[in-house]
Length: 304
Ligand code: GDP
Image 1 (spheres, rainbow, N blue to C red):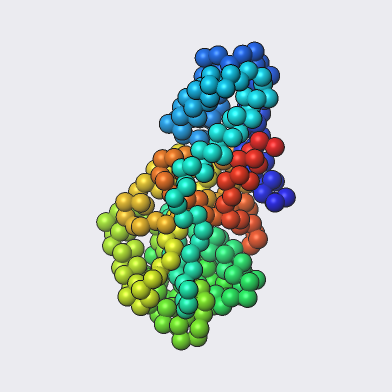
Image 2: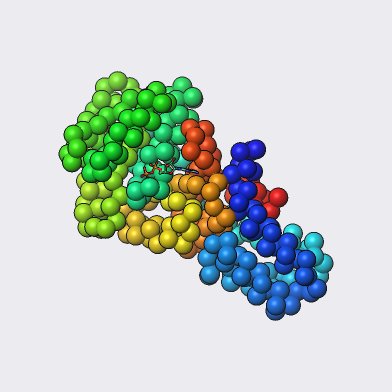
C-alpha cells in the first residue's frame, strides 16, 4: 500500500493540514471548533450533508463520553469517518461479482475523460496477471478515437479487443464479442460504452439495449455495471452519478484520479448521498495503478 499512501498524498495534505491547523488552535470543543471542522470537511469534498452529520454526531459523542483532550477528539473523528462508511455500506455488495461458471461481463459507464478506458486496461492487466482469458469490447463507437484507444490498451496488456466500424451499433459489437468470448472460452469480457449524458434518452436506450443483449445471451450477466467517476471533479462527480443512476442499474463506482486531487472526501459523499459502493480506485495512469477500495485503509491514508 505504498502506492496507496502516495496516491492519497494530496488529499491527506489538505485534510490533515487543515485538521492540524484546527487542532493547533485547539482550546476546547466548542461551537467554533465544530464550525471549523465542518468547513474542513466540506473543503475536502465530503459533501455538505455529510460534513454536518459527522459534526453533529461528534458533538453528541463528545458530550456523552466527556471527551476533552486534543488526541481523544482527533481519534474520535477518525473512528467516525471509518464507521460512517462502514455502517452506511453494511448491507452492501462491496466486492466485484463473477460468474460461477462461464463468462463474466462487466459493463463500464461514465462520461468522456473520466478514465473508463484506462480503468478497463488496468483491470484487463490484473485479470491477465491472474491467468484469466480477458476480452475487451469497444462499445463506444460514437467518439472517434475511443476504439483506437481501447485497441492500444489491448495491445499494451496483451488481450483481445472486439471492435466494430465507426458509428456502428454498440449493441452489435457487444453481441459479436459475447459470441466470440463464449466460442473461445474466455473468462471475462470488459465492455466500454459511450457516455453521452447530453442526451439522456439516447443514452438510456443505448445502455438498455446493450444490457438486454448481454442478459439474453447470459442470464446472470452483466455481473457489474460500473460507473466511472473522476475524483478531481468533486461535487460534479456526484451530479453525474445521480444522472447515471437514473438511466441504468449501477452496481458500483470506480473512482479515478485520486492521485491528482485533494478531494478524497468525495468517497464519503458518494457513500452517504448515493448509497453506492466504491469498488475500485484509480491512483495513476499506469497499468498497475488500480486498487480495490478498502474504507479503513482509505480513511487512515487521509490522516497519516
Ligand atoms: P475515458 O474517456 O473515460 O475512457 O477516459 P480515459 O481512460 O481516456 O482517461 C482520460 C485521461 O485520464 C487519460 O489521460 C488517462 O491517462 C487519465 N487517467 C485515467 N485514470 C487515471 C488515474 O487514476 N490517475 C490519473 N492521474 N490519471 C488517470
